[in-house]
Length: 292
Image (cartoon, rainbow, N blue to C red):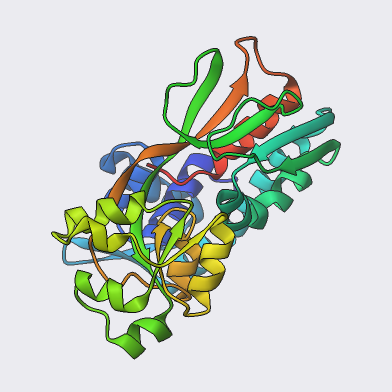
């Protein structure tokens, strides 16, 4: 039996993972008819049925599902081999400045992937004095929480930010939080200033002055630690708290959210082409970002 085309195998893997032809087409950035053609061609090459038509939908046969799982593992092995070898030859030292919240909640759980791909890079991660600080001369690359006006820098958007109240499920259940005004009963927690809660109170139709109460912390990790321990309710970053929300450690008691005027940016000092080490970290970071 000849080896099926990689494109056809990718079409099957995407269809099996996402469940519909149109989602697979979006995932692969091709047309639905192209996905259907790839699946039919793959069936012909393999000599057994991959799917059945149920009404207007396609459903994998048990044999098709088993084969798709095998293909997923094979494609993962191929991608891993490419990543491991892509990092060979890239070496040197790299100092990255990253905001504490982004670093602890997003970067740290993924940093082993970079080290595995680029084992010859000596990486140092530091935290800035301010979330938007991109001035430290010893730093090669910044992950800053800032506005987009950063002159004489190479700036790339990583993620826009939405703030929403977050608390532990135990606190929400104990206080029966359901209306925006209930946030006052939970105990407000702030990072550095009252601005975010004031904006949220204004959007919720509540008096802004009432937002100026509660505990003010100087570090986002302290805010989240208190939040996880059911000590109050925080105005949380929905992006870096995604895993905590998904796992149920934190919950959103209210649907109302505000868009931050600042975003996470990847910032490279100067205007010259980045070094191979900086370019490697930049490419790795962009690969890790969720699809928009």
